[in-house]
Length: 425
Picture 1 (cartoon, one colour):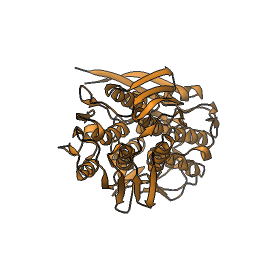
Picture 2 (spheres, one colour; picture 1 turned 135 degrees about the vertical axis):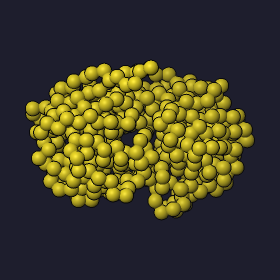
Picture 3 (cartoon, helix red, strand yellow; picture 1 turned 90 degrees about the vertical axis):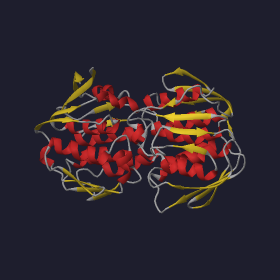
Picture 4 (tube, helix red, strand yellow; picture 1 turned 180 degrees about the vertical axis):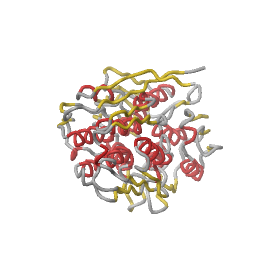
């Protein structure tokens, strides 16, 4: 049996890209707000939200657990919750949505019954053991035999109180998951980090801000410990800011082509950590020789493709966590750049070194980019096609995970795209 998906070849524009494009709402914030609104008692209205594969999986899971989630318009949700979730009738299937999978795994411990949290073949390769072990240490009956989904949770006794330690080095989502579940506990919960590092700590700040908005009582005891009261959540209306990770592609497209793209929001107005990539992008073609990517992980594919046209080589450090994203992004970026020109990139341990060659611009270098079903690889490598002829993005539809309108937005800015069906055995 075969299936078909779309492949897209980008035709380099003959001039600067100009126009206005509004990036979609933040995936990270939308999924946090959906969950917290569902855990609140009452009706919350979310505006500016992202409608994509990842948020659809979250919304469908919440509906399966007794929450009324209406979608009155293309960027709005109306969520009516009762303060608690109910056991679903079937396993929760969450595709490759990391936020939904990690967050619901923790919250499932508050639901009075057995729950299975599962995902697609890609999600079943993404680690969740640190979160499982942390929940087990609290007394939750939970198991993930492979260390990845599926996860089996029995929350019959409710979310326990007490102190829980979590290593957030692999993913900040583990920390956020525990924090968001903690207000549902039988008593106070202390969430403490172990280890020196935490992947993308700025996303924990996003979590804490959303929790506070929905009425949670969280006190920071020190730099690595939070005390969460069993306050539950209160229904509130919420406005989701645009997605900073999506904005990075537009900022890079602007500077690569010498254009002027208005995204409707200043970089300084974002609260998401990937927005710090703006200040790196603005240095092109003189990007720093070393870029520390740990706190702007989703922007690394954008920056790495930009680095291919830089005046000097760029080493990306602090990006080991990219190996356990939707795919091994360090390997995927290196492979894609070397598909364009052999020797353009190499992996050095968990670092990525991009050789950089400004003379790439204007050349015809046919390259078929294997996205590995990863939306950020697809969107990042589309930028290479703005300067090089012959770049084809395979499985281009994977951008639906977080930015369904990406290809249409590029077209709006004047980029010509050749679309063809892609046949796979």
